[in-house]
Length: 176
Image (cartoon, rainbow, N blue to C red; front, side):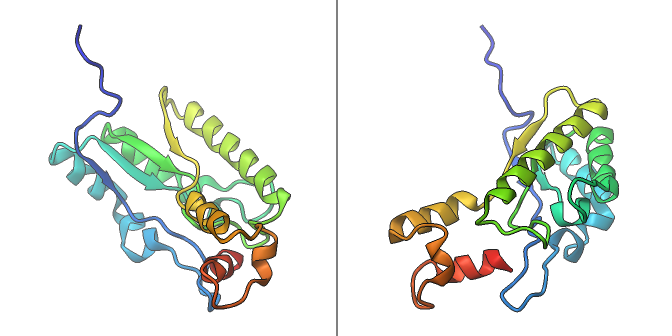
């Protein structure tokens, strides 16, 4: 029996797609800063030419959902269509730190909005003809949860922790 691999290539590549706000309030957008946003087709063609058929890339939720429940896919569709044109398998990172400014990651509304966003992404990808999509729902929330868990402080308490605690920098970063 021939083994079926889950990924299209042994090597995987990834594009940095962080889009969070720093402590000073400045939002990072690494897809823009690295030029990948502009050169996505060329980047994907280079991966394919090197035999890398599976990659990780990300959506910028803060650009897609600027108003609750209203999705503008113009920042994502060029990436999705370029991946299809290059016949690449993409693991779509749905939330790599960044999220819309009106959300508070520590509140239940975040979970509800994120679930709706994920469902909307899945519908769009299906409508675009991707039969077997791969997703990474969030890149670093597990990291934050581990820090909170090891500190013995609940998520809501972490908003008021001493600035010298091991999780304060992470809690501050996520609030921005």
